Length: 341
Image (tube, rainbow, N blue to C red; front, side):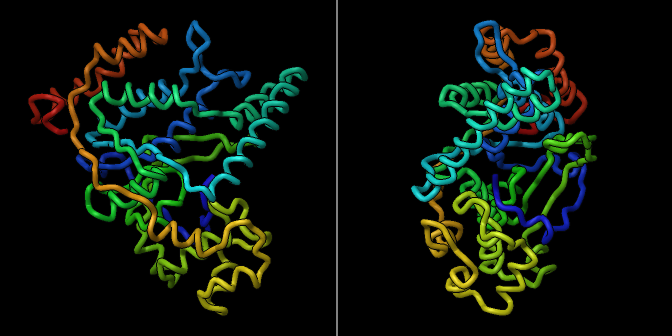
């Protein structure tokens, strides 16, 4: 879901080459949900192996990570820990939406409307514990470091970015900016066109970078005002925000009425949680310094065991993708993959 503060942002398009040799933190749950949502068959059914196990997430993780490595980018994946108690309402709303989407998907299939079926199916994705463990197992076989966040993955990745452990945070959501990440990277490894959800329209999308300091300067904002604006618009902890208030209107309210938390109640705050609690979580989320960022060479035999032997992936396709980083090690000055890692 994430916060929508798009009108306040001016992303800069970049090429993947500009991120060469950079260490980046990937919001793992955000990324895996993307794969579960978009990597589907024509009728909306996710990719599955011969035993009926969903494999969309493994396909996306392998090929996207190969793409990052082949561009000399050094990713680590940050996984969510325990969600804050006040996120329970959001989780419940998501569950209800998914249940509704499942029914609409089935109805669309019965009516033969494949476009609608695929659209609704993309809203039904569920990330299970088994999928999480499979993802970690594959990433480890690829030599990619994994960071276990004590709570929200984006909060941990943002902390790592602020403290100079990584250059930027890869996520499609903007929450990292509210958590104070200096650099947000979106659409990474995505070039070309992407279908607009629910519409027969395609938009051109390229990798882009957003700098927090430039966002604050361009909008004459403090970090506190940015967080308050996000809370007005709606975050993962207060879904939908306050009706009728978008980023621009929220900014007007804050500039006129100040940054006291009473401004929310003055404009129709109607959530079980207090805005102060949400704000405090963005400012002081649980994070940890107990992680190790060590990149290793990809173990192609372990990768094949997971993808090909356990989940029926094509060995030819796995080998073909792997050739990308083998060629990189040959062309560069490095003597092996670990040379640039």
